Image 1 (cartoon, one colour):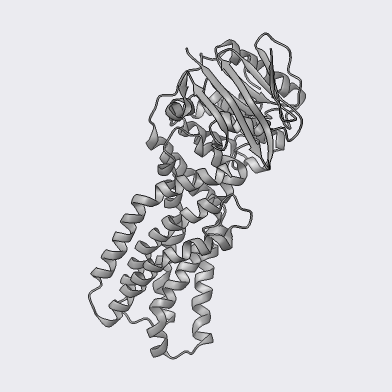
Image 2: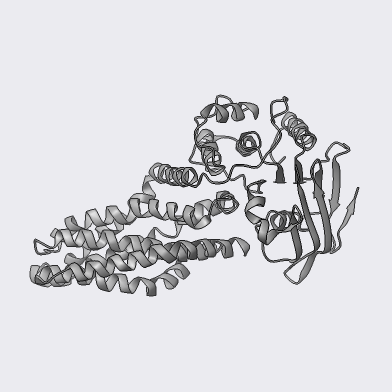
Length: 214
Length: 240
């Protein structure tokens, strides 16, 4: 399976300040790319650019060697993005939240898959409570259940470990590694130090220059 | 975070499934609004209050009231619909589901249409059904009730569509309400003219089909262009 996200000469300016300039990235299947840097160094902005949400940047993006403009539909159907905000509706139950995501991925009815995904993130028994009544960590877990529910090769995760407890962090880390082993690809920002594995790469942002370290 | 067993190798989702996504978005928004009844009732209460206060404030004279009734009912319904527009995309924007909607491989314009349809179903349609009852209070002549409800039902669909463009443009602003009204009100004027005109014509005993046909034409144009404008506006707002 081909899977390659490339950025050439990426630069982004915010409030007269360059967040990053001349950033080249080449992300292929089987990699976990951790984007790191101090607060305000443009990690979230970079993820938003790479996931095709922001158009306000310089440089070029390629998905499987095709310019992003052309490959956008194919790219979006390979992408699973978890943003800073969890993307779950407080008034809906976890099951209803997941049902919407499942339907958006083109998969209509499969409550058993949703229940299994919720069980997988440790939310068995909470599936019929309004999500707004769950704790912050549990709400985040509802969003993380999407990783199991709608299989996509490219995961773009913005601070996925926020509010997750220690066991949850370890399990999620294992899940990310498993995804990379299976030929998927993970782009993640986090302040949590990830276990060193052969799949792990770092991209460091900050103070106007960015460099890639293997 | 997950079962340890390795899942099937990741693969591309089959393209399509637009109907499934459309139905799910429609259903989700319907459930959400039905769980927050206050938000649904707000415009209806506003409409009823305005219409109730007018006879008290002006004069209980049935003759006078029946002459101003068509315009009054239409203006009050229009403002009530405007009142509810600000929250159309606001909730989705705040909890991050809007960015997920934008990242869906399905066409955004069609999904936005589902949201607007729910808005009309729970705002425009109830306003249209309520208007004849309030018309009685304004001594609206018998025989014009059906036209009033019909013109409001048709017109409010256009109002929802046009208003959604403004709501999409202002969703990124923390206090977008006033700007939304300024953006949208000029575009509401044609709908108001022909809507109130239809009711006026019904009172005078003239043919109403021309007015209703123009309202229908406005709706058709709005249906054709508004979804794309809403989608483009949402992308601009998210980019900001």
